[in-house]
Length: 161
Picture 1: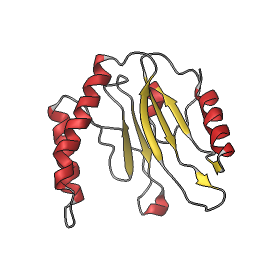
Picture 2: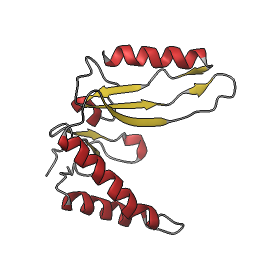
Picture 3: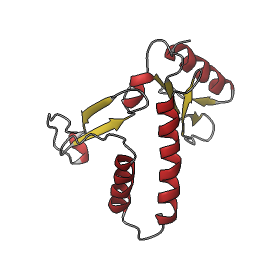
Picture 4: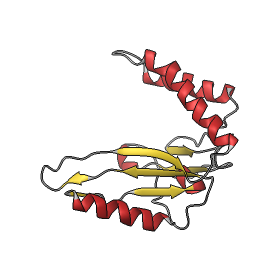
């Protein structure tokens, strides 16, 4: 099974239902850490597979969005730990989400929570974004430039750990 084959099957099913999703992401392993990767090649057993589908209705033009993480086979201890950490982080954060809450403060609390649990984070510098999938897939980090049109200068910086 490959990323391309799964993407074709998803698109065929959605077209039959009156939707189109030409940019669906099916990214296995380390490719799932890159938010710009649509995914290529084999989907290996026991690794995470990120599927992100954002179809548009051909009648109403309504856009949907669904992102899920799967494992073909048995999830490793690292993947199970990260899943538990995400669930625990949600329990920490959801009560704080309310009108007037400071998003930056909540984000910093979540980062601190993940660091306390032994999860690594990258800092990429101004105008850069880090994508994250470690430790589930090893150290899958990537720093990418944010578009200058969003008000961020495009600079080349290395991630700091």
